[in-house]
Length: 278
Image (cartoon, rainbow, N blue to C red; front, side, top):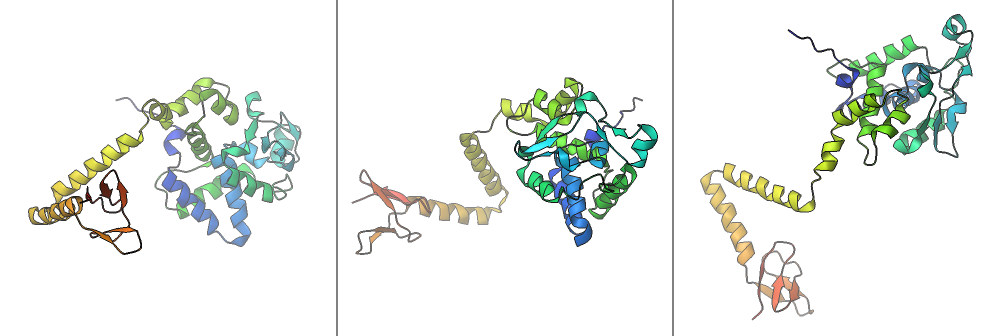
């Protein structure tokens, strides 16, 4: 029996779970709310890796270009960097040094910008272990029924960016800092955006779908109720009542709304009644 290995894409948050997670952040109390929302936005919207989030620096915010610029390296006095990297932090890969446009989510970008003075290397953001614990606890409070961890927040961002109207694999790769274009293609395929673009639903299709849904609804009604509904609809469509209230405006006898008169016929756009004018 072949065992399929789970990917962090399998633990990306759905739209509903995103709202649940954000609600848990907002309900965490005034002293924690902004920290937790910034954490979600940086990893779950802009796709920072946990190491990038834990080393977020105010200098990364580029206001005039409306985005974040992750450097090739920077000095860092955290215990991990001093012990393992001689006081120099750098992204996981060279591709990790990148520009992330704030236009991915302007609300999220402006939120982070308002609070970026807190997001320096002076003890906040937290170390990666604290970030793991915070993510796990917020997901538990949000009652999300699967594992949630920092990299699944990053996967959530990748799925969201992949689904943007004009996004392609190369842009996704650049924004997420992947070395391989194939990784971006995996997310494009998983998001289903290529299929949506190839088979767009136009307005006529939506109207047809709506009619089909109405027909299905009618079929499910008991026979007596269905006949009543059909009679009401028939009366509205075949109505001949048309009144002039003396103000020059014509009124429909069915719904008492103004009607449009054109080429010897009148039509009520509210209830659909129509007929010729005697």
